[in-house]
Length: 164
Image (cartoon, rainbow, N blue to C red; front, side, top):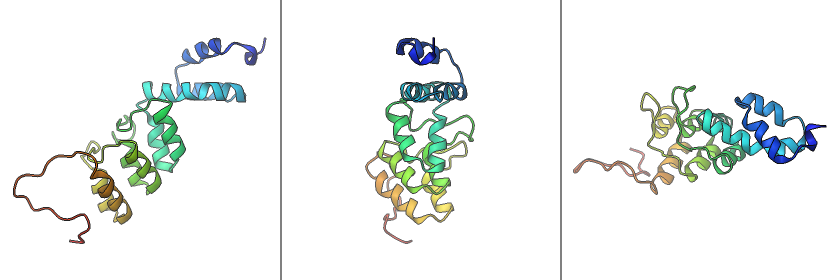
C-alpha cells in the first residue's frame, strides 16, 4: 500500500512522530497531497519546537506570505526571540536586512517595536544606525498605535516628523 492511500489521520500521526523540521519537510515534499496536508503541521512544529525560526528566515528574505502563513496557521509568536540569531526578533531581522514589506507585515500583525535583542538593540535604533529613513518612518508611524513606555515627566520629546 502506498503512503498516498493512507487516511489523513494516519498521515498526521506519522508527521507528529517526526521530530525535526527538516525531516517533516522532506516527508511532505514526497507528493502534492502530503504537502498540502502537512504544511500546517510543519509550521506548527516549527513554532512549538524551534521558537518560530521560520519567521526570522522569512523576515530576513522578505517572504511576507511565509510570515502571514506562519502567524495564522502555524500559530507562531510574532515576538519570539530565537535561540540561534542572538535572540533577535523577526522585526529586528527584517530591519537589519532591509526588508521593508516584511517589517510592515510584522508590525501590522502586532510585533512589538520596542522589543530588542540581547544587546537591547531595537528596530528603530537599528534603522537609525543603518540610516534607513524608510524604516524609521514606518516604525514611528505604526508604533504610535502600540503602547510603549511613558517618558519621564518634563523630558524633551522630538516630533516624529522633525529632522532634529
